Length: 246
Image 1 (cartoon, rainbow, N blue to C red):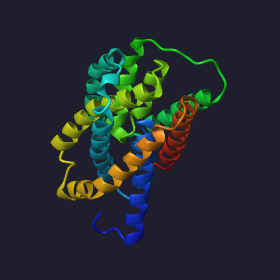
Image 2: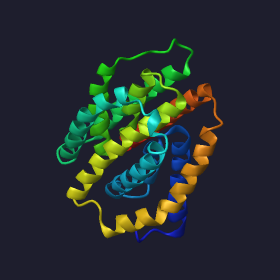
Image 3: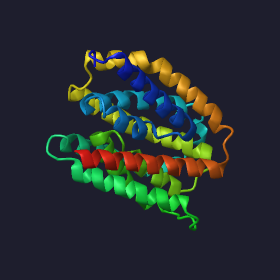
């Protein structure tokens, strides 16, 4: 990335600021927004590990201050399946052509987002969904850096309020992200270049998260649900475009 010209730097900074502003409001969405857009200009092998570090830092900052609101009964069943999923994703990096998986993921995300935006009765899901959500979230997160929708869908079906949602999803990402960081580190993805970029972009991410957090305090629950659904729909479209170009 040292060969980036100025417009590419400005583009990357703008994408990251917007992505983490949305993350500050909703508690997720940064990777879903940033990875597909940054991958248009930069190698995925650099983008995904970098976003993994930034997301982990964002998750810590969002989860710790309100840790008393974490929905532990909904979170704990996810953990073993998430670890298993991350391990599977790191293995699949070496053996799987990802086009079909990415295509299926994008269609699933868009269908759920459309359902959430339409005036249907709300669905409710049991904690047994933690198994498939953790496994798929961990696997897809390790492959593409965008496994968050599975955690979001699972937690949405458990119907927390918006602050419980934001805090719990951040805590999920702390655990999921730490697993991925360890895996990426052991695989040699974190070069000096990636770490330099990580340190340099932290002030931009911190400002975006702070501004998004201010908006979060002023947004209604209905508007929050619609925002989450729109983010899922947009990310599904971005992933679909990416899958069709692969």
